[in-house]
Structure formats: C-alpha cells, structure tokens
Length: 430
Ligand SMILES: Cc1cc2nc3c(=O)[nH]c(=O)nc-3n(C[C@H](O)[C@H](O)[C@H](O)COP(=O)(O)OP(=O)(O)OC[C@H]3O[C@@H](n4cnc5c(N)ncnc54)[C@H](O)[C@@H]3O)c2cc1C
Image 1: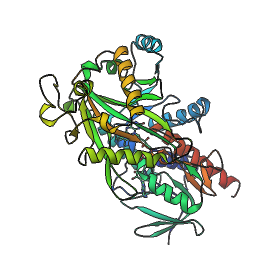
Image 2 (image 1 turned 120 degrees about the horizontal axis):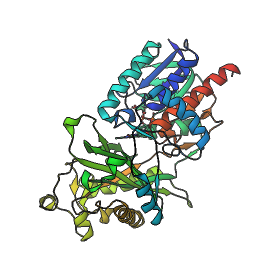
Image 3 (image 1 turned 45 degrees about the horizontal axis):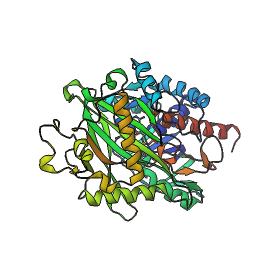
Image 4 (image 1 turned 90 degrees about the vertical axis):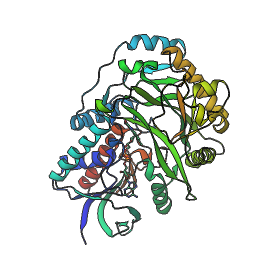
C-alpha cells in the first residue's frame, strides 16, 4: 500500500494553496490530492472573482489585517490575476456614509467561469509537473486517525499529514469527522438572504466597480456581484434526513458572446444564534426546506413590483410589459417570499434594498427579481490547537468548510497556513 507525506482532501483553492506551498518549500514531498468530483472543482470554477483586500473572505476570528496582507501577497504571486480599476468611488461612498452604510474599497480580479476553468487546468498541470498526484472522482468517507489511514469508497490510504479542505458542500462530512474524532466545534453563525437580479442599466455601479461591497446596518451586506454575462444558478443540498433542497447563487462568463446585460448579487444578513446556542446549519436547513416546500421543490422568485404591492408573483404575470427581462434561473417558482422568509431577516434586507436604491438608484424597479433562499453555511468552526489550523496532531482543517475562509483568496491563504504547519512539524520532528 502507498503512503503519502501529505494527503489533501479537496481540490478547491484551500487544497491547492496547501499543495503549492508544500511543493515550493519541499519539492520532494509526496502529496496526494483527492476529490469526490471528477474534475478539480470548488469556487475557482464558479465565476472566479478574487478579492485581495482584508476583511473580504477572511473571518475576523482567525485573521487580522496584517496577517491577511502577508498571505494575500503570497496568493497574488501564484494566481497573479489582472486587478480591475474602480471609478467614481468617492461619490458612492459619500452617499453611503450619509445613510450609515459603507462601501468598502476592495482590490478585485474577475476571470469569469470560463476563465476560472482555464486557471484550474493551469494550476493542476503545474502541480502535476511538481509530481503531486490527483485522484478525482473519489469520495473520502472516513478517517482512521489512530492508524493514520484515510478511507474512501475504493481504498484505504496511509498518510503522515492530513489536510481536510472539503468546502461548504463538505460541511456535513467535516462535522461527521469532528464528531468521530472528538474535535469541539460550533456552527452558530449563518448568512441568509436573497439574490437580486436586474438589468445592468438599473445597477450601473457595476461599470465603475465590478463587485461593490456594501455593508448596511443590521449586519446586511452585498456579496458576489456578477454582471454583463451574468446568470443565477441553484445549488442542491441534502438535509440531515436526506431531503433535497436548494440555495441560489450566481456567476458570470467572461465570453462576450454570452452577454445578457443583466446583473445579479446576493444581499445577505448574518445571523448569530446565541442563547440557547443552536446549529446555524440546522436553522438554515429548516429555512431551505420550508422554501422548498412552498416552491414545489424549487427556489422562489418574486418581482419587486409584486412584492411592493404585497402580492405573490404568478407564472402568467411574471413577464408582463413592466417585467421586461426573463429570469436567468427560469426553473424557479414565482411566489411570495414574504410568506416564507423570517420577518426580521426580510425587514433588514428590504431596508438595505431601499438604502441601496438611494445610493445607486434603479434597483427597486418593479422588474427586479428577488430569488430566495440564498444560504451560506460556512461557520463550522473547529477548536484549533495552533495558528496553522491544526485540530488534532497532524490533522489540519481548512477552507470554507472549516470556517477559516469565505472566498477563494482566503481559502488559498488558509491552505498556505496549514502547509506551514506541516513544514513546522517536520522541523520539530513531531
Ligand atoms: C456558485 C458559486 C460561486 C462562487 N463565486 C465566488 C467568487 O466569485 N469569488 C470567491 O472568492 N468565492 C466564490 N465562491 C465561494 C468559493 O467557492 C469558496 O469560498 C471557495 O471555493 C472555498 O474554497 P475551499 O477550498 O474551502 O472549498 P471548495 O472550493 O468548495 O472545495 C472543496 C472540495 O472538496 C471536495 N470534497 C468535499 N467533500 C469531499 C469528500 N468527502 N471527499 C472528497 N472530496 C470532497 C469538493 O468536491 C470540492 O471540490 C463561490 C461559490 C459558489 C458555490
């Protein structure tokens, strides 16, 4: 049976970041990257917007500005994407300040989903050149920690160091691992909200700033803006009881042939469950299932015009003369999100939409579509032993699934930190 110096579960940016750092410092290290998908996946292949400014993508529990900047420099050296210009920021920022909102200035690059796919190919090819092995289409099911064995559906694999970076979709897998190994964690934070879709001319700020990061009162923020060739997509989740439900998301192509002159972005409210502390994942799951029930097994969508009148949207009224563009996620069910969404979340989000419409007028046009639910469960926070995200000796838990990041660059930076931990343990012979 083969043995690896380090096995990395997950070929998203966290896993790739760890592999690059390890092979930079120790070219002869024997590394296996294993992923249940048939191709290297994760966020790099979904729109691929990269943010290079703290705190975007860096949870404050694990990162401060100085630490993030140090690692962002390293991330930039490997990924090296073209950073986009921004214009007229002072105008938007002044308007936002007057409303007690904030527009962050973030250094951004955008490759698009097609550009992300090209980048993944290049990164994988480079790692293969460095003799890193990939096993794609292989799902890890268990860890035999005492024997240092990783278990998949096909085989057992021996390791010296194990880095687990399973992303948000690997949330449940990671919780199972932590429960089995007695690693304490909490997951009491979750983001819930909507995805807004409208015509680009109704949200023209995207011409000045590709992914504008607005922070509103009551912990609401804009997130993941896509424009020009922008599409809303749905992601499938499976509840603990095996029931399917969906969350929406968005992406954009860089190919001008796919341009539809639409824009979409998320408006999310962060919920922190305190006394009695409950699982954010379970809370979000219940909301997802409830939306699924009322949407007949699909996410819901409602035109702002209908929402303002307190009416649900219907299939045959969804595209009348005022509602002058078609939804890009056409499989959604026209309905009434105010019937499904918890009052407090809806109130904060609607207030933020009004503020946004004041800062950059247009978003409250009756044709704008609100899709629900958009859920971000990335707060599965383990108790770590050190700053390298080591949760148990020689076992590192990183990336969005472990709550050490919230985006591509933060995930990559987490990978570098875990790799540093592995290298440090070699020095000390641990
Ligand atoms: C549609 C969409 C668009 C996004 N757009 C952006 C964006 O533009 N910019 C940005 O910064 N962030 C974006 N994100 C968020 C971004 O994807 C994440 O922040 C980032 O990918 C997290 O990296 P990660 O390595 O932790 O996890 P991931 O990238 O999710 O990778 C985890 C990998 O682990 C694998 N895996 C999970 N469980 C197992 C298992 N049991 N066995 C084997 N393999 C397993 C998965 O298949 C996956 O490939 C987007 C996310 C989505 C879903």
